[in-house]
Length: 242
Image 1 (cartoon, rainbow, N blue to C red):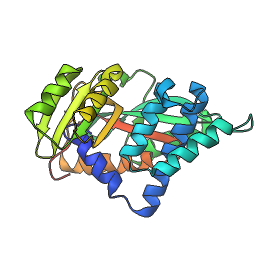
Image 2: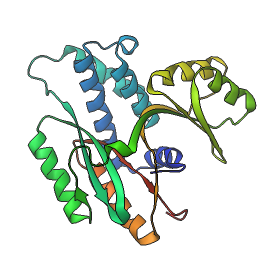
Image 3: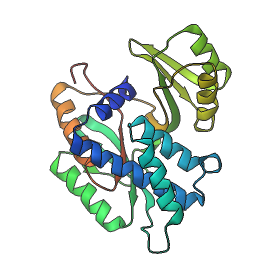
């Protein structure tokens, strides 16, 4: 979602019920193991994809032991281990909203069939490659509750591109390559990072009414429930009550 969505997403993840949380953990474990296999190492210092996957898992409150065990299993996995490929899909939701989906799959035919079925059932439509991707840009996003001038100055000095302040704290945007430089600088200065991860930010947003917002959230929830789906992004600007 647009606006203060990153804060809302963190709250949703932390407030998920046990079954939702278990499924979410499984997605992060899959992403970590895929990153180890694709990057050829279990050391995040030499594997940026793994570093991103670990940061996303920690933001979703995946226990550190689960993360460490996933890396160990992936490092020791033989040829029989599942080989997950990154695949993206694009589509349209209620109210003319754009939806961008990231997946990790070992069966593309199954994944696209599942995604198409959700779109058809929930009032959306699956688009072609490139139909909405141009509306999103990959960015690093950090969240911290400290809104002090020192925190903002530290972030700017080390590569922050934009800073949004709200009642919940600071949302700092960076280029993907600058995310960890900003994070390390803030951590070294004593600021506690709530979340730091690579994400997709919409270049423009679409305001949707309450009815379309509810339909869109139902569609996104159904997409996120699919085992192969890792992340779902939208350019919707939701009403405050949603």
